Length: 176
Image (cartoon, rainbow, N blue to C red; front, side, top):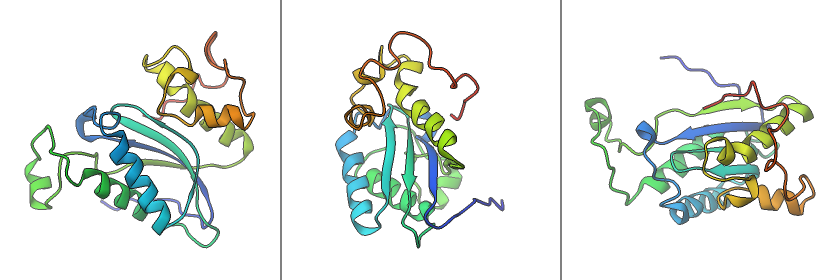
């Protein structure tokens, strides 16, 4: 398959990354995931502008360095570091076995190049509201595995944002 991704040096991207067959591995192994992110960011810097980790998937917005467009290599390294030492719950398909892949992550991920400030804001809101949308929390601030609290400190949100009524502008967004 000839899959083409839009790459822009110094670009800002929204990502959805999902575990293989939606296994609930990420929150259970959150320290391993954090370690993988820290290690890759130290080797190949990028800014995480927003992130949420749910049991079986995560969403993130990254800003890459001005001279760099390789988000795929970074995701590959994060996935590899996270997967090392984890025993998969599901057996690998013959195709995965042939490529010596574990059944931890879906092979691909979804990316979207952020186009403008409005697009960035909609995706940041989507990320922070995601635990509420999936029923993991009553409000974005109640979910520990998110950049929401940092966003409140940066005065992007009021602390009670998303807890009392639906968030405007997210109705048509379905990126999972």
